Length: 185
Image 1 (cartoon, rainbow, N blue to C red):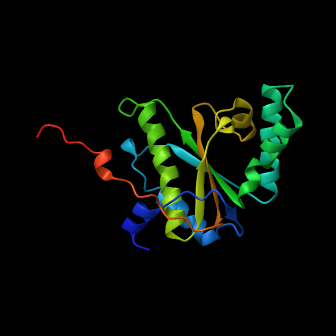
Image 2: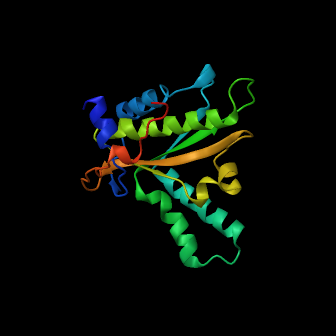
C-alpha cells in the first residue's frame, strides 16, 4: 500500500476480529510510532501490549475502577466495563511519558505521544489490519493508571484496539476547503 493511500483512506474499525497482529506486523507498528515528530528527541511515549488473558484482566481492572468510583455501580455497568477490552484480540495502550524540559513543554510531549498513537493506526491500516483508537473514562482513571503501572509524569493517550477488520468501510469524503483558509495573501 502506498503511504498517501494509507493517509487519505484510513478509517477506524470498531468491529475487530482475530487473529491479533503477528509479531512482524506489531514490530512495524512500533517502528512507525517511533518515527513520530519528537521535538528534542525525548521519545515521550511507551507502549503496553495486551492480549489473551490479559484482556480479561484489563476488563476486571476497568470494573474495579468503576466500582471504586461508584460503589453503587450497577451490575450492567460493571459487566460493560469488563467487556470493553474484549472488543479486539489485542490492545496497545499508548502512554505519554512527559518530563520537565527547558525547550519542550509538556503539551508538545503529549502531542508527540498522540502522533505515535496515530502512526500505529496508520501502520495498521497499511498492513491490512483494523484499528480503533479509544479513550473514555478508563483512559483518565487513577485506579486504571495505577493498575497498569503508570508512574509520575505518565498518562494514557489512548487504547489502540487491533485485529482484523470486521467489515470494509470507506473513508467519508470530506471537502478540504471547509477546513483550510489562507492568511496573509
